Image 1 (tube, helix red, strand yellow):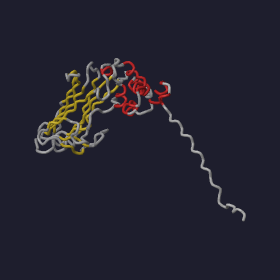
Image 2 (cartoon, rainbow, N blue to C red; image 1 turned 90 degrees about the vertical axis):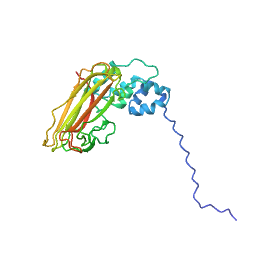
Image 3 (cartoon, one colour; image 1 turned 60 degrees about the horizontal axis):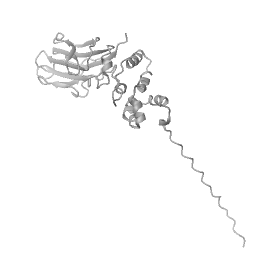
Image 4 (cartoon, rainbow, N blue to C red; image 1 turned 180 degrees about the horizontal axis):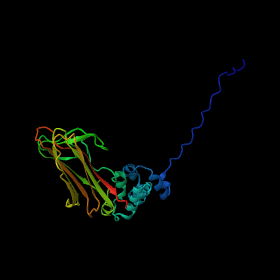
Length: 283
């Protein structure tokens, strides 16, 4: 008998697998091109991850050139002024210490409110508090405060209530040569008010301190008390430290409040949206 002819389909020959592509090794780039690539990476990622890749990358992240390239991308008036300051206020070479511009770019302290929890949205966290009477509480605003991150406020009682924050300017990202350049100013602001049926009193004290916590400059406000039946009055206190002395490293922000009726509970001054903002002097 003749051989049986196969009627099945011809077997398919599997296609060869593609050759694996060689991984791109950024470390093979010339340093000037690698700087450009890294300058598009978020600053916190540069400091937290890229710096750990190898010694070469660490040297780039710790140097000034990368951060100056990042700052140069802001073409606004403030950005140009910052770039000029960064170039002219360079810190001296420090053995095995990263360039302070890295923390500056990551923390972005210019134009940002350095006060934590300014409206009580986190309760009393971040504040050093001294309770008088029935102590501090947080309530909803009775009058809208423009620009506030939360329409809540800290409310005082029938005896002086006090709270305070001390800001470490270097920890926030500013470096000594910039602080001593004479080209920055520190703007402070606070909102305070009363409830309609109770008068209140308020005080503010802001101090600029050196590294040893010695007072170099200060601003205080003791406005007239708000009387009872005040239609929920709300007032704004501001001040600008424009001629900052050399050596400022900390800002102490402290305010007090109480009511004038001496009622049990929380009928005293209502404070909110406190701010300390560092700005670049453009002129």
